[in-house]
Image (cartoon, rainbow, N blue to C red; front, side):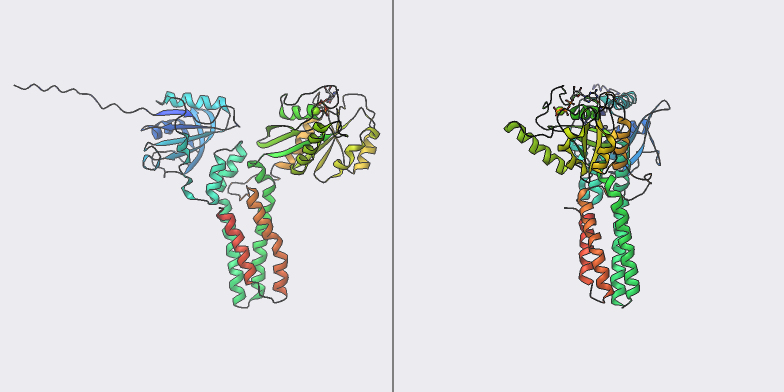
Length: 436
Ligand SMILES: Nc1nc2c(ncn2[C@@H]2O[C@H](COP(=O)(O)OP(=O)(O)OP(=O)(O)O)[C@@H](O)[C@H]2O)c(=O)[nH]1
Ligand SMILES: [Mg+2]
């Protein structure tokens, strides 16, 4: 007699893991990966999409915007990407959650995922997030790469729209106008050709207007702080960085080399560079420091030229020429102390209004930050679906495009052949659409 023992046991499912894969404290974003058979189901319980409810049936690789919610409480604004097992590197379902609220909300998101059944673990296989790069060198792939590193909500929103094709659509619109112009020329309809060219030019100009702030969302904007010794440059750098990055002392010549730190102003990544005071170098090391200061000034978007309120202008003449430069902002520091600096004379000498601050007490720092915000943030409100230029390379190509327009129009007016010129414009657009 045989005796069969049947054990009624369900096969044990392998667990679904959740982990933060971004280094702690890096920027305002953390990326959480959910990996395993229940990844989609667990994410579904925690995610409320803006336009989508069910993550189980979404196409692999697409991204979605929404919130992670726990018992009706919104924990964070997130961008989520689901990669189905057959497309992921390990064969497991992956849900990638890009959290924007910094490390604390991300931890709460993790806890919520654990509540729904995920096993919390140390980071596994960050390589998985490379799934989706299959789109090659397209503008969308570029936006996606930057989106995963976005340092602010605004950056994430803007890049998400570009990932979803806003900039490509605008560029394809320009291409269409150029081709129409070309066609009109062949039919000897010069007026129509001109009109189409003008339309193309208008779109390019509109796009370039977004470049100033669009690029600043993805690349740190460099601000260099210059001025005579002891005027408070390092104190100002530390105030902008909200930490003691540079050494401050009452003795002139404290900062001898370049000191730089990163911060963000409403999501705009900034690099603040503090340098040696502008004066005759006393030794070789100081001379090198001053040379670096000059280099930093050349590569910075804005330089803050600091004057000391407690010293007469005759003691600070070395900073005048730097303050006259186009991208220089005139700053008078130490306004909490009795002044010996004639502000009206300084402003007349430089031809600019000065921002008056005390880097030590914080007085006037709000105005300085407001100025920087105005420089780097979009002029109007960012519209959903708006095309934005977000890399310097795109800006360069489109600027070259714009520069060529007047000559082409002139050639057209003179009845010259502009076929080759249009081809060159199309090539420039192609380079933006499909960067190497
Ligand atoms: N009262 C007052 N003191 C300030 C202010 N800013 C800086 N100081 C003081 O001025 C002195 C020089 O400040 P630093 O920030 O080291 O000046 P610096 O321009 O970096 O100097 P160097 O690196 O030597 O060129 C320190 O004693 C600061 O505490 C301010 O706004 N108000
Ligand atoms: Mg200093």
